[in-house]
Structure formats: structure tokens, C-alpha cells
Image (cartoon, rainbow, N blue to C red; front, side):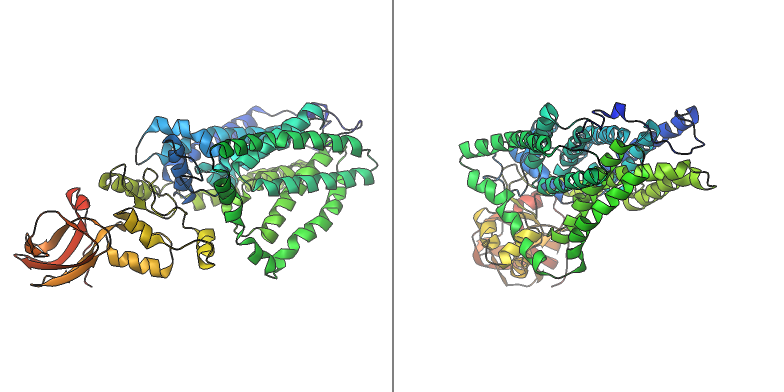
Length: 566
């Protein structure tokens, strides 16, 4: 948001910083080869991690919502979600092409690669406004290998599109004079970012505060920034910002789902915010410290650099990164790695001119600064990603098992939609915010009732209240992969046994040794019998060891009971 007669309208007009250097101005052949090899390594690691990196629980949650869109369901009304809808809506046509397959998360992860390439291009363009093309090249490589940025953007999640829009907005802000069409375009991009994630509110506040720092630093430096022109540009930005969210709100309102949309995107996510603000912690002071410190740091940066335009852009980028990170630590209720996704490339961008300056000095170790930084990044990245281990296969096997055991119209209980292709009996996803709302009585805890009402015979033990977990353990039997099906183990075979069921379904009596015979509720024992909720009497002959009553469809499809003694 830099506009001034003294400031160049485009990055191409920025003069390089005249600093002592032993390095040639152009990028040499050896350096180009080194950069090319590093890019090859970067994308090779990316492809390997797409297939091997462990799946985060958010990935199938997002994909379950995408599955809903692809099958004619409406987000929020038919499938719960606590994210803005644009990303899922855009992914639905692509998801439909892949069809029902256990490893669908892999190709959907591959689909995130163009966004990663776009991110790197934005980083390069922004870095080009801060210094030389050489610095921009190595900044882009360093940003690409940044562990959190690399790993989180490998996952299939809304944050992938969110950070791309954030970097695009910054590229527009720093790429020329902020007025007219550019200001409106920035607003349009920010509006799209809000349509992907409401966390964009932090980004917007951080950028506005960073603009204020630039304004103060420029005035102190004697540079004229016209407040009236900046106000007009901001008005155009606001106009552009409301278009895409406005269209989405109008669409959901036309479908009679505006209340559900408001609850999922806004109300559901606010329950933990009050707790964070009530707690007195040193982290609470990070944001006010940043507000006080950044104008002084910005003035120091401007004094150090002879290119005022590039210096002010650097101040903008650094301030936005610091304000965003400090606001997360001070105010955000739940912080995860993906929340740092828009911050880390900015830190690399803001620090790059300083690293480039050090690398140009006549110090024995200065030539290796960039190499040391990249080596540290790659080492940390390999330690976290462990690409030599396939940590994704277990989730693929779980999905394959559930697809094998169930029909498309069967309900499956999981925490957040981990099995993607099946309806969930409980509307809400079972994560931290939902559990907190359930404890406060804001969400009814009717999980057992919903499992019974929908005749849900398959589940993966999700995070749930203790009493619900006990109910599940009493009414489901589990295999070695911890996938549960309706049923229970009855202990060692006895001539007469009584048990109760809650899920109405067809059940089969199985034993460890021998084919069981006898009676069930006074009727001859069959391979499959319907059992209504209530108590039942089993008389078994011709079998030994442990005995269990198991959902018949699972038995027919080769479900492997994990036998245990009660």
C-alpha cells in the first residue's frame, strides 16, 4: 500500500541497494545449476510427501464436504462444516472425476501442487520488489523449503488456497502504486480469501496495521504519503472485498441455509475465544509489544537501506508477518501449524534483504550463509516429513476396509468425516470446539440415540464424551485396525448366555472354534438373524472358545474380529 510521487510505481523502477560486494550482479551458470538442482529436490520431496506424509484429520474432513457437494448435498445444511465454502465448492468437480477410491486423498493432494507453484511465483515477484533477482531466486528456494510452509501446503486443506490468495494480495500491494484497479483487485482477492477462511480477518487486520507502520515511518523519514489517496484506495479495496462473500451469502440464503451457514462459519468457532482472553499469560503481551516496536524497527530498516521504496516494502512485509504471528499467540483460541502458513513465507521475504547483505560482505563465512540456511531447512524438513516412511498407507487401508464393509447408503460414525464417502449419523464434527460446546450444553449430546436411529453399524472410535465412549464399547466390537462394527463379545462359550443389543440389525453368532449351533431367542440358530434392541438369550452347542454376536454384513464380507477375554 505504498503510493507516492517519490516511490516508484513498479518494482522494475526500483534501484538496487548499493552495498559492497564481491559477487557479480548477474546469476552465474554454476549458481543457476545449483538453483535448478534445489528446485528439482524441492519438487521431488513434494511428490514423495504427497504419497507418504501422514494424513491430518482435517484433510478427510474437507474432502467429506467436497464429497457432499459432488453428490448434491448442501454444505452446512446437509453436512456440517466450520469453514468458509469456496475451496470445497471449487474442488467438487475434480473430486467427482476420481470417483470412489480409497486413496482419493492422494490425487487430491496432487491437485494442490499448482497452488504451491503459484505461491513460489508470488514469493519471487514480491522478493523482486525488495532487492535483486538473485536475492529473489534464493528467497523463493528458502521459502519453498520452509518446513511448516512445505508440509502444510502438501496436505489437502482449505489453507492451500487461502495462502495463495494472501500472497497474491501482497504481490499486488507491493507491485505498484496502490490505487484504482489495483486497489479494487486487492479487495477482490481478499474477499475470495474470506470466502475460503474466516482467519482472513487476522490477515486483513495485520496488513492494515502494517500499512499504518509504513505511513508513520514514511512521514518520519520525510516521505510524503497522501492520506486522502490512501483512504480512497481503501474504499475501492472494501468494495472489491464484499463481492465474492456477498454472492456466496446470497446463494446460501436462496437455498434457505443462511442460518446454518452463519452458525458453521461464525458462531460455532467463537466458543473458545473468551477463555483465551481471560487467561493472563506473557503471550497476551506479544501483540501490544509488536505494535510499539514495529515503527522503531521500520525506521531502523529505512535508515539502513538506500532504496527507500524497497525499504518501505520490506517494512510492510515484516510488519504484517509480526502482527499476524503476535495476534495468533495473543488472541487466537486454537493454534495449529496451518495457522502459521501465511506467516512463514513473509518472514523469509522480510529477512532476505538482511541475509543478502551479510552474504555480500567481505567475511570468511559470509559466502556460506545461504547454504547454511538451506541446509538447516532441509534437515529439519526431512526430520519432520520422514519421506522414507509411508505414513499415509494406514489411513488408505482404513478407508478401503470401510468401503468394503459398507454400502453407499450405510451410515458410518467417525470423528470428522475420515471415511469421506459415507454419511455420518451425528451432524457435528467431533473436535475441540464441538466437545467444548457439548460440555457447556450448547450442543445436545445425543450420539447414542443417533447411532440407533440411523442403524449405524460401523465406526472408528472418535473423540467423544466418556459416557458415549462407554456406550460404544458396550455395543460395538473391534478388529485389529480399531474399526468397530455393531456387536459384542460374550466371553467363553456356555450352554446358556444372555446379552442385549441397541442397534437394530441382522447379526451372526461366531465362535473361535467350531461352527455354532443351538437357539437364539428360542429359534434355531441361523447364519443371520435380525435382532431388535433389547435382551436376547443364546444357547450354543458344538463350539468352543470365545463367542461373539457380530453385524452379519461385516461377517459376510470378511470382517476379522479381534478376540479378547472380558
